[in-house]
Length: 380
Ligand code: BGC
Image (tube, rainbow, N blue to C red):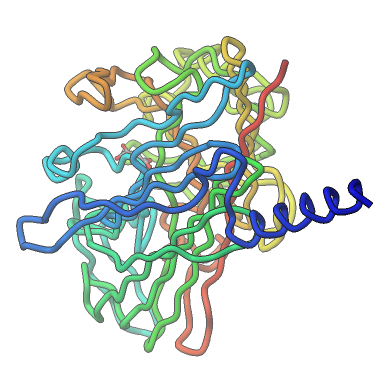
């Protein structure tokens, strides 16, 4: 009888903990704090998402930026594995898209021009002659509406933004929603959706710079990378795709067998010279629209593994080539060249001008919806 009562009490306690989404340590949940004001006087907040295993993501509604992401190593020790700052001013001063939501169009559009339904659109030009990552004031620099969302398997934050017709030159009033979920399996899941009142183009992505040894803990050249891509999109000198889908075979772009990022990065290869290292879009194997493994990265020192799963057709692999030690991040860590890598799930660059690439047009009647998951684990 006593045993039965004990069992019943334990069951009830577990049920309550599940409903309240509280773990044994009592920390899981979402906490909101002030993060300052933009120069225009908009209030900015920062949300701390803690899952049932103690992993933690800090996300601000300024640019939807993940400012810190703490996951365990093989001994259980938590480290922050993304480059970032602990104050809004540092983000306002300028940075190369650390941890941000990128839109309306992640990556480049040649000369900032494209045609749709017979009309030519001129976008803001902010990367030499080209348009990059949504323009001068892209989604990484706007204040989003934000609020926690109850989910069964972790902790979540929903961000929404209404982008006006003509913003940075794009047609259509666009309603965007991005949901970040830190699951209880140590996954950072990002779900993007959008609708428009006029045909437009869209290509949203996320721009965290990862270092699985911990942010500021040296370069990422010894991380081992598997990329599930038989082909990539070579570019011209300005990083605009030539239109070719080139085989990775017998090139430094072949990561079909896990290889150290730095093993071939300095080879005299024209594409590597154009990118000053890796800064290229890979054509992911498998069917776009279905969730599949895009990449797996392993850092031997800590045992951390990160897998990237996505519904997107492509992924930009960027090795932090333009970091140069001028930015100091959290805990006074100085970010030198190649101290972080990005795996930006996306459509191919310049798709609006490349009829053979999968389309990035969002119709007035359509709904944009993509999912990407960064899954963290350890190898012992
Ligand atoms: C681009 C790089 C760029 C970096 C930061 C990446 O997504 O491909 O060329 O330098 O973002 O701006």
